[in-house]
Image (cartoon, rainbow, N blue to C red; front, side, top):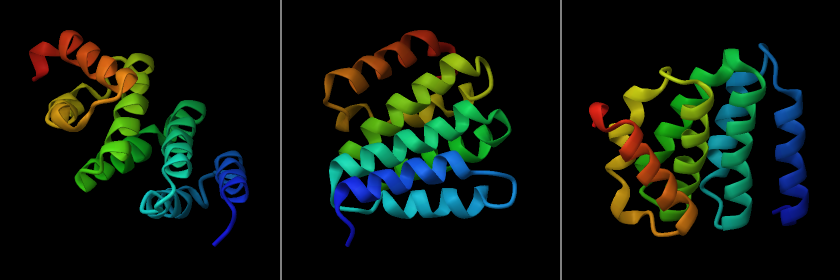
Length: 131
C-alpha cells in the first residue's frame, strides 16, 4: 500500500483532474477508498468528493448520491464526514438536497464528534419540515 501522504496527494490530483469522461470512474475509486483502514485518509477522500461537488456543480448530484451511499456502511468516521460534507452542500445548494435530510438524521446515534454532531443539529433545526 502507498504511504498516507501519497494516497492523499493522489486524491487531490483526482479531484483536480475530474471531467465528463472520468467523473464516474473517479467517484467509484474514491468510494472504494472509503474502505481503507486509515481514518485520516478516508476523511480526505470524503472531503474530496465534496470538493468535486462544490467546484463543478454539474457533478454535485453524482457526488451526493455517492456520499449518501456511503452512509450504508454505518462506520462512524465515514458517517461523520459524510454529514459534514452534505451539510455544506445543503447550505450551498439550497433546496436541492433537502430530501436527503431524513437519511442523515437517522444516523444521529453514531455521530459523536462535536463538528458533525453540530452539523446534524443544524440539519434537524433547518429541515425539520422534511424529517
